[in-house]
Image (tube, rainbow, N blue to C red; front, side):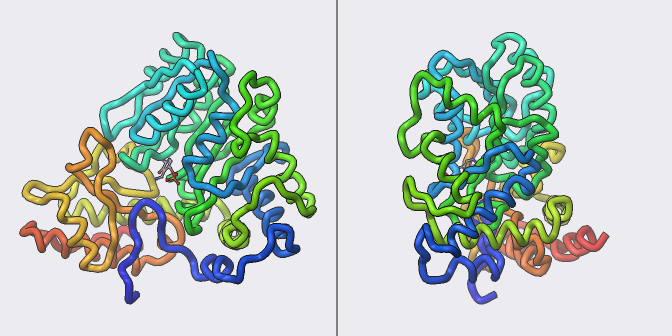
Length: 385
Ligand code: PMP
């Protein structure tokens, strides 16, 4: 590839067919092509999310933060009690959103790079008896994945609704919305779903949809499920409809991208991400790089790696010079101590691009006087094994 690979934890490299679908002249939001793509995308989302037929998918023009605000504004009212299973920067963000709706919010935190223990979550839930439990499936600031299924079981003990921020997880990590009984699973287009940025995507359970009619404080108009759900239902019935203009090119790209995932099958897609993560970790280990926390918490979709002794954040620019754009740290407590490499979406079908990335990290490290070699061989052995 003549340009550097985009290997940050979103936006990411996208598949050629998604790029082609995106790159057409903008269609009208009520054109047959857009209606067909919108309707198909909503139906595909249920399968990608592992959701039941009565769950409601929603496609919004906006980023992941908008999808978070949408979920919170339609589920949480003043006086509600929210437990946030906090694994970093984005857990703080959703907690702040709940506070702004007037909820009482309690964070269950862990050391940076770890997730809270199930016993700790359970005891917070038993004490606060929350109406809602929030968690970030994979926190992009730390690379930590939580056990979403276990959190659903704990929340179910007190009948609390669950909201999972899957922005850095959906389609890269296993998630079975119906089987686990989750109420909202949300994401953004620029992550493992494999599109350019610009869509907030979520699926709501029947119970989550019903909550809107009992809210005392309605959400801001653009965030209001009562405005949007009739539009989603119309699109799924292949009928034109309008509340606010959707991002039409992204909707075309979404239909193509989701179809691509479903052709492979979600088990295959998640297994591919797992395999890529294991092979990347084999390369990091060969290079002597340490993860921010124990690898038992490490996500499929990104690696958060500590700078080795004597190397600092200038490493990120050196890696870019060797052909891969990676990201610096994000967690406020230690952002200068680590960097992040995304490995999600279409690029995980391209082992040569993943090899180019581990090579770029190796060469960047060498520029900083750190002895490093063998990343490619370690990657290929793990990938093939
Ligand atoms: N949650 C997580 C886990 C994220 O990784 C991000 C983006 N990096 C967001 C929420 C916010 O998404 P956006 O930047 O698209 O608003």
